[in-house]
Length: 511
Ligand SMILES: Nc1ncnc2c1ncn2[C@@H]1O[C@H](COP(=O)(O)OP(=O)(O)O)[C@@H](O)[C@H]1O
Ligand SMILES: [Mg+2]
Image (tube, rainbow, N blue to C red):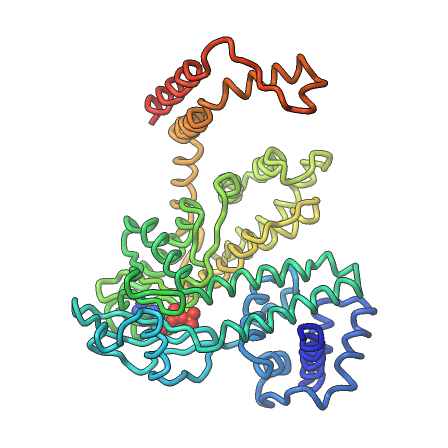
């Protein structure tokens, strides 16, 4: 059943793009090779009549995608963060897609809550509102917990959306394979990776337990961040299809006039938005990757509240350190140093010319620093930086692209609140603090302690590993068979104890 269904879905997609006049624009934006163009037109054109008409008031691409349904809208939104795949122009158009749908009835939401939590809604909540917002995957109700009287937000997954998304994702996989077979040159664009990425994001959003887990980890990481708040999830009132969390009370970040009228210090708020985002990305390596206006509020006391943890970004510690050094190099306009860091990290192959690379970096940095303070953009800096590094043979990691795209959004939010904001001034203290704590002597001690702990953990196994290695060396013919375990000379437990002791001592000493 899958094959015919997928072919039909593919034809309907092509037909809808043809019918709405979006096909040409998409193929151009993706610089599709001739074979792929021909195939797309063959799939789409003769079947135009099968395509959805869509809303003629929308621009062609938005019109086609919206007509094809929620999975396509979501896919489009995620592609809008992948300018590396679809090009900057198409990414900008895709960003216009609105993930808003008519809500489903409150009674159905209540029956889902009841089925998942195993108790009638009226027993759990003393109030349960009509939906306050509805999107392709879930909708949100405002409620009050009966026992504690606390106000909460209850997010409920749309009925039937899981299977519907899975069917469409299946068709996307099919299309990706089809595109790769047809036009191997598009492998550079990694259509299959893109669909896999989409699938992992959507699976995360379809399972509210994962979103609750992200919320909880993020809240824990940021609990000491001044002026920042995250609604805590209520595990006992959450499940796969239901997420209950503290109600976030405040003014929408998207309404600067109301913020000013309420007496908030907008320039401070804008600075904090930038700083918090960088702090989460650099210090924790775990950042909110969907930080648009709709997911931020300002509480009466001026705290910034963030919610909606469907899309989070993660960056490993090594990459964070390297990038902090790179940013600092730019801030100090020391392009030689930025180049050095890239070479040392092995990001740029060693056979490239370091001086030429440093000059290319200067060409990225100088125009940005020469611009007016209120036009400087860190997101642009990163985008140009990735362009240069790719020219010098380095492939940018997906997580860094996600960071860069989120930075575009975060800068947009900050500027809309305070158009005069100087992003560098806001960023500098966070970057230099991070460098101090991650590259100074303290960091070295921490690294050593970690290494010692690891040795400590493997300690009990080490003597045996060493003996095995020595034995293998002395008896190569038997080592291949790997059947003989030699009898130890010193009792293993004694050596193990010694190693564990040394590991623990170093670990404790350095902590
Ligand atoms: N904890 C909360 N407190 C107050 N309002 C919330 C909360 N969570 C969600 N909302 C409201 O519901 C809307 C949609 O919720 P969100 O988690 O952003 O879902 P989506 O993934 O559909 O964007 C938000 O824009 C906000 O207005
Ligand atoms: Mg949201």
